[in-house]
Length: 373
Image (tube, rainbow, N blue to C red):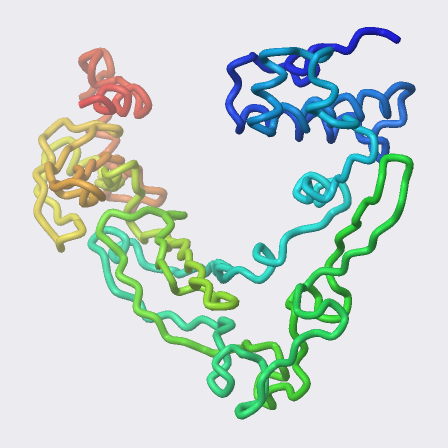
């Protein structure tokens, strides 16, 4: 007979491996070579070899004897090795093989589902913050049976099919020994109990849909698609589990005048060419109300004026962005006879050659100049 391989070599672990490392290596290799998963030639023998190594190294006394004497001197101590090996001690491994799960996992408290809602707000509300009242429909514990699912005064009974375990175990014999296949009980669906008298209000589900009004505080400086989390405002949990969360996504309506650029506000100011040429004082809107702006004589389309601290409040720090006013000189589409006469007289006295080069910059160039300011 060929010499037996070293048990540590079989499991691929060091001789000073911890119990957790030994168990982890065994699980990995047992799953890899189990005949139900691996149909390659020799898989059965490797599976037996892995189990024999684990049987020895997982037992402190057997491991100590093996470390001292090796294979040859310890046959009597180890007994018959893999022959007649009882797999019942490794239920967690075979649960993974056959799809089983522990009753404790299935019957543990379960967290409720998260909910999502969209709230539409104005540009000003996004800028300065607000408080909104929203209405949601969510599943909560039944107010009559308090989530039990049974009619008040009655109690769920133990499932006769699984005797309250929530699992059905079916044993079968193979060449490797006696295996136990663990599946969820089809009668109680893993609950371990049967509701014989369902609650008339929730029909045995333990849940009911309720409409709730919730107040949402929206901080200053939020933007379109910003999200707010309200902890515990989602659907109710099961078996005493905590409720889920409510996630609010904000939709900000476009403003009539302003365009948002991070925390700055862009505003296009239309003026006629007389105002641009001669200079003027004009009234402009801001988030804080109307204010006066002086347009210097000789201003050109694309010139940018900055109002410090008149933009959007910063979301997570103090202060505000700026308002940028972009000048747009509007050419009239229709002229009276007198206006045309005056413009013709003006045109005869003007020459584009007299215009300084910096005054001929386009809008894009001007915006680039102030973008980092």
